[in-house]
Length: 284
View (cartoon, one colour):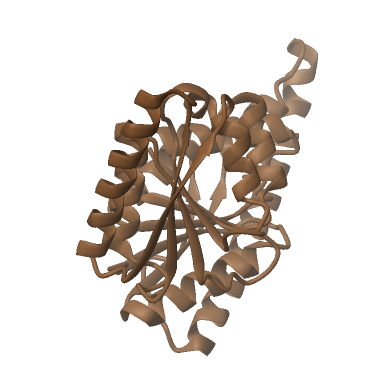
């Protein structure tokens, strides 16, 4: 079950969706939520670095101003989060403004939480999309908790596609989802394996999918099906699953065989995060 949920807060339109999603999951499991906003002093320092001795004074003044403004925005996010959670009648602990290195702070907090919920447009106070993707990639690579990425609408999860290729990351993602059951067990779950076209690959796919289905059934998921997709490009096939025609949620490992290996870095990461129309449950 999902007992402790961490919500990363920033000034984006999907932060309220992330908050409401965390509230709904906490209600389902009688759990609690934590709101965390950041003052990333390292990034502020990099952005205000002076070019010479004469500009150091002005750089320091700018750094102080940006830090104060960011701290004020972060506290406003925490206040809004607290009001929203209190109104919902859900327990919350440890809500705070974190200061320091963003990635390290998040990783530290995730050690004592089951799930991180964040918006797909989360800027982490970065204006550069590539930098945001890289930061999220580092979090997914090292975090102890799973990550749920939501969009601009409240998720109504009834159909789940589990991207499974037999690799350790895909197995861990499936296991984490089965253990946490963030959206309950009354779901239609489809185990999807992207395979090659040889006879050996077809037989291996049948065994992989059967074993995964048995694992999910043992954890109380009663409606489990399996699907094999023949393709040489697993990453694109998973992106297709995330378009919403076949699933309301995609469960995927952050790293896996073949084309999945770069799923959360580079162009595949950007495509998945930008093109997905459904929430993403990700774990390394």
